[in-house]
Image (cartoon, rainbow, N blue to C red; front, top):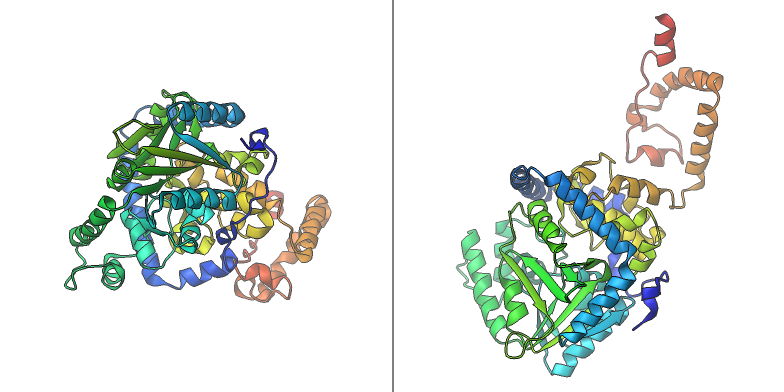
Length: 475
């Protein structure tokens, strides 16, 4: 067992793909100029929000469930070393093999070597954020192994040489006409007369995947939860492709972030009520698959669990930032975020987009490498209200903003503002002088350099005709 149970702050390697090619402000500006993208996003997020809101309203104890989920996550983080050791013990006792990966490179080497040992050149995959985080598909391809995504949305993204833009619905930025074109161009054996009817598109994917399921003996999955008490792993999904991957192959390799462990079997009942309602707007997931080690003659006969750190222990050491590790990957924060709805996930330049990505990715890869992400928010608080485990994302965003190295001009401006606000007479004179800001042009576009960088992405508020002090004095 490697030493990260002692919780040193590992600097993750091999996660450069988490970082965007350009900062969020520039990437967002590009996304905002795409009207089709905005229509796709608005339609999808509005639909999901409405469905989720209706099924949440059915539960009179929803807030109590949220509190329970939050408390369980806090307990897990406080006892993570012990729980992970217990999970390893139980998985091993049930015939599985546990591997510890300190970073992305180590995890990719472990999985690639395990696949090579089987002699297979193709693997089927269950949708997994952890494998996206470490760039597993790219590592497998570099080793001459073909990964096949079996989740429909992930398959669309893969065939389109695209990147996921949503935690739950990776192809949310695509409409059905675009999906049809992707299938016609990249899916083997597709009917050239394929239409863009959803049932027809799903049928085409089903025919293609059926052959792949039946002729591939190695599968790779993530895990929604790992139960320390029993060594049981859990995957929840809506299509049944996960069930096929978890039962048909001879070898199953699961990559799980260390934060996904839960203490007991009974604790799972809280999360299995929270997750489907907050994510897909369902009362329960259509497919909830659970397995414990290896059962002779039933399911995979070789099971490997790769426990992934990749910066998580560094996040755990931050008393405020560690809340990000409570995330159960429901994507509720994305579906209510006004920023995400207008820019989409690609603008974040991160495997984890939206509000949770804005607080998780900078901590996993270094705040300075993702310095713009903590600012990819209006701090409206909708994400906090929607989060099923009560992650205070706005508080973490502010916390991370304080860790960013700000330009000298900005630091000087903030210091001058603090000095002025601490002196009432000087502040009053500044208020009167603020009326001259009208000379700077509409929305402050006339600010001189370097101050014009501030007004390039936000409006300079127009000063009121009468200050509060003047109003108070007159009454």
